[in-house]
Every structure is written in structure tokens, then in C-alpha cells.
Image (cartoon, rainbow, N blue to C red; front, top):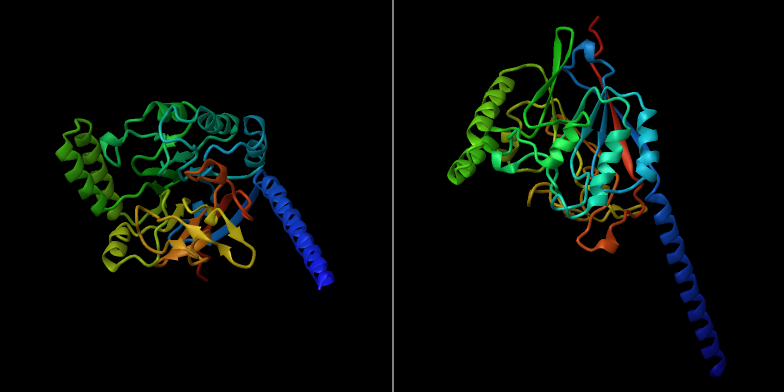
Length: 336
């Protein structure tokens, strides 16, 4: 009876050793993989895109959360500066602090990235759900009053996307716009009017004017939003977000699930906007990153660069290489 026990003990020891070696291997790979960077390319045909914008390339960068890629972001800057793009879209959560003093290293990581960029012709920025915020929220969702954090970005060539902005090529334009809908404007009006913020009135008037102009326009509209728009919203909310007839949506927030398992994918994604739909554990893998559709509108969701968690030692990505996304727009082929 003693020999089987010795075999059992030996087997248990070997099993424990194998487990420890496997965990050490995963930990080593994770540390290595979190410092890698890949460029994920997408090519999308937009039915209304003018021929003058054919080949227009957008670099989508999201959810860095203060991650460092070499000294002064040298590897990230080098990778970006080697790319051929027409516009950079920052989709929020680039730093990892809730106010302007919480994490100076995280804030500096963003400044180092911006300082290193060589092409700053068009750089657009929207805030995420982690601060510090670039735009003063007391002015409403579309207030144009920058915070100190926002001033630092503007000084480095960043356009804080408070209101829609046109990019012109000849007689043609496409619009880059923040989340803009009649429902959001009405929420702003009621909430901030009741709070009696003096900055609100001019900001809200400009937002209403911009919304009305875009709604009647047949020009291409690209929504830059931190939060993706889930495909399974209730009909009323879906209709509200389709008012402007967006041609393309660019977003982040999900981190590609942050922690992924081979052959399974993302284990969890957060709500897309304080409790919207299609999120939680074992989500639909088609929506967590890459191209999906909101109605008939293509939506590119970046898995982002960094990681977040209330628990600091859980701020890592598992089997989820940091990425930026290069989106090439195509106009329809000419009809014969």
C-alpha cells in the first residue's frame, strides 16, 4: 500500500511543479506581450465618401491608461511616425487618473506621446470615462472650455472635439463629430440649466446649431466616441443615435476584453455607457474589437494600448497585444 502512495505523492509534486512552471511562463509572456505593439489595419467603403477622400487614412488610438512604451514613449512614437495617415483620432482614456494630480507619470506618458508625433495636421481628442478630462464638464457635454489638462494638449496641436469639425478637400468635406443627438442636447439643457452654470448657454446654443446643420447635411459624418454603440439597444435609443446618419463610428473602451483566453476570446467587457446593453461576462466576441455594425453603420472598436482596474496589480492585458488601428476609407467604385 505504501508504493502507490509514493507514486501519488510524486505525481502531485510533478503536477504542482508543472503548474508553477506554466504560470511562470504565462507571467513572463504577459510581461513581454504588454510591451509589444501591433498595427491593425481596416479598409472600409463608405457609400457617400467623395472620390477626393478615397484612401483617407485615420489612425485610431485609445485606452492607453498611461502605459509606457519605452523611455518617453520612444517605441510607440517610432511606430506611429512610420505610418502614413491623414488624421489621428484619440478615443479617450489615454491617462489613468481621476483628477489632474492623481498620477503625474500617467499624464506625462500622454504628453511624451504627443511631443513625439511628427504629423499633427489633424489630431482629434475625446474624453473617456477615466480623467483627468480635457474639457470642462460644467459647460455641458459640448462645452468648449478646456481644463488645464486640455490646455496642455491644445498646446501640442490637439483639437479637443467639443463640436463637429470639418475636413476639406477641394469642394468636398467630411465631418468629425463627438456624440451628438437630440436626446443628449435635451439632457444637457435640463441638467445644466437647472444647475445654473453661466458657461452653459453659449455652449449649448452652438451645439444645437451644429446638430441642426449636420442633420440636414448629406455630407460624410464620422462619430468619434469613447463608448461604442451596442447593436442591441432598444429601438428608441437606436433611432436617437441614427438621427445624424453617421457613416462611420470610431470607439474604444472595451480594451478588447483586456483579459482574453485562447479559443475563447474576451472574458468580460464593461458597460458601454453606464449600463447600456451587450456587455458583461462572455460577451459577443464580434463587438469587443475590430469592425462591427450599428445598424448599417460600420463601427471600428480599438482594443487599445493599456489596461485599467481598481486593483493596481490587475492592470495588465492577458493574451491581448496592445494595438493601434489604421482605418483606410474608400469611396464607391465609379459606375460604368
